[in-house]
Length: 438
Ligand SMILES: *[C@@H]1O[C@H](CO)[C@@H](O)[C@H](O)[C@H]1NC(C)=O
Ligand SMILES: *[C@@H]1O[C@H](CO)[C@@H](O)[C@H](O)[C@H]1NC(C)=O
Ligand SMILES: *[C@@H]1O[C@H](CO)[C@@H](O)[C@H](O)[C@H]1NC(C)=O
Ligand SMILES: [Zn+2]
Image (cartoon, rainbow, N blue to C red):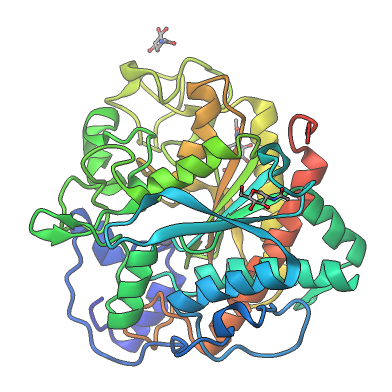
């Protein structure tokens, strides 16, 4: 980012920037970097605090302390191993290797346990955007808290938001699969270079990196499927852009891995992709405003290609377009988002806004839209209520605003973890889909 005078920085912090900075949204997503090194926020941990898994992580809901460093890439792995050793949970590797040869690792907890894939109904995904520091930490610490609280029959406390031991057990009963670090190459690079790196690390022409959150199979080919005047903001075909969408949908091992989880744990009903730093809980859709009146007006209907993504039109009037969602599903989409946003605000740190994804800015190829679109595109697939959660603050004192200060990092953990807890309880109440046959 450019160095801005202090009033400019404060203005930046209050903009709804989400994962893209204002100067990246202009100019087809290409960043004009003139960074001034003013510190990098919370330092990345050195060494391995979990000693190869000999120690299990514990979050901020079961103890009162302050984390002074971020987890490094190796610690995210050894922390997961620590949970395996302490609680006997099972991990999985997706079948795809990243460009740099890393495996994407996840784990499953709760439900009826074991190897029955149908037991898992909620999926948390972390750090698909590399520079959004703390995303993986938030996921790993939350699961650690759940397991610790369950084992010791205690509750959880995040700021002024508290949950009972019984609620912990209810939350776990949903069955959770999670990938703390879905972009390991990108995060490793960002942690080594402090370069505000967003994408993965696969070479693309003379540039490097694909924006994984534009690479999913949902209206991916935006030069065809979106209105000409919004195309430059929904994604990019230029490899140098921060929103470069790759050569085809699911061209990347990281996005294929997330699809693999949804295919393998095919009863997943609820999905959160965790981002920073707008302070938003976003529900479907991200392509255009939602509407429940016209079922044929949807992402599969090419007769709307030339008008999709325009938010100022009125669906059903003239060429106006809105993305279809049945009223019942929409109520659940919005209801669970509101509960999550309210818990996140109560946990302290900052207040969270609940809105539709497209209200931030319309996008193509995003993970949440892909997840929610699956059952429309193929009715044999499970309905997934899908969300993008944008935690945190812009750190105006760091070289990259996505790098939180120590106090922001800790506040973010409490906010997201309260949100996750509330989300699991909402999921159980709204419904987890078919009764498990496990
Ligand atoms: C699940 O499958 C893995 C790999 O086949 C095996 O190592 C593990 O023991 C199984 N767990 C249970 C609970 O059956
Ligand atoms: C669309 O989203 C808004 C929130 O942005 C929500 O209040 C509304 O109920 C949704 N409408 C439909 C028709 O789904
Ligand atoms: C697509 O939308 C048009 C209206 O623009 C409608 O006439 C047509 O039936 C729709 N196609 C499908 C497959 O629903
Ligand atoms: Zn992001």
